[in-house]
Length: 427
Image 1 (cartoon, rainbow, N blue to C red):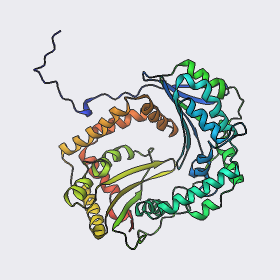
Image 2: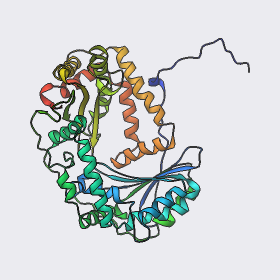
Image 3: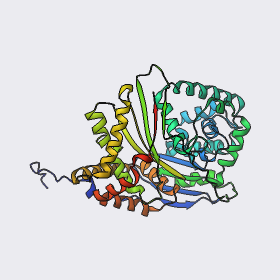
């Protein structure tokens, strides 16, 4: 067949494509632990995530969850921190422990052939970390030093304060680091949290890459042979949200030339029917470089290098926050323009061309996410940890494709009212 180089290939919008999330395998190890795995990709690499209910939401006092996650790799009864790091480097593996508001995740990236050697080390860390006093003292010194440096930056302080304003400083989602809270950490507190929240009975394991039943057996041989007492789910007491003052203006640096602006409100999480269409509306408003906020406040007014609006969903709530840094002399003007753009969304219907551009941007990004094994695994992880099925993904695609400009205008009138927003400005 002769290739016709004179005919321009057809151009298709991202909205025209079909979006199929590859299936994931669900099974249990011999001791009943849940494993979700998918075979995708061509390189002999693997990602394994062990997800525990060990986020900030579960901690008994501030700063515990982050300290435990940071120190998990720093020693067991069999290996010290140097030996653990040396072993990981020898096999060219990467091991990270990340904690968020809801969960903590132990993530391993490795060549598949090294799993038999690496999995016993990970098992050791998850079941036998010791949190030595010396390691804790080093962590506390470093954490306090980082905090003191960060507190000099207006954007860091603004990020702390907006969550505290929206949820309340005592709420798990509103807490922020304080020097005295880090100093109060003890080895006993960390050990107690570790034993209560990093229990194998509570773990969900996710594995993706060029993996087969052979790699599943590797995992089962280490994590599936030890009997575990199945966790009994307990009803969680939801702490009350105690919002702060509607407007907070903080002078962090008397000589500062820049102001950090955070404008936010509480917003439902992924389980609410308004969440999926709000993803489209938020993208149009401030979710990408071509958004209305960017076009106005960066391109037209020249107040900032960048301004974004983001949705942050948690298991027990969420938020919608606009964030930017501008010159100190134009803080008030920038805030005014943000509300002006909200008002336009409430009063005017977006054009067909603008909405198509936003949908193509949003769905085009999804095409990239569905191209690699690790990003597919992360999408499944989000679905499963939130108690959804694949139908949730399919429904979101349908909403992204079909939501109308009129529906977005109605949505804006529910969620973009100025009186519902809180402001934090830090100079």
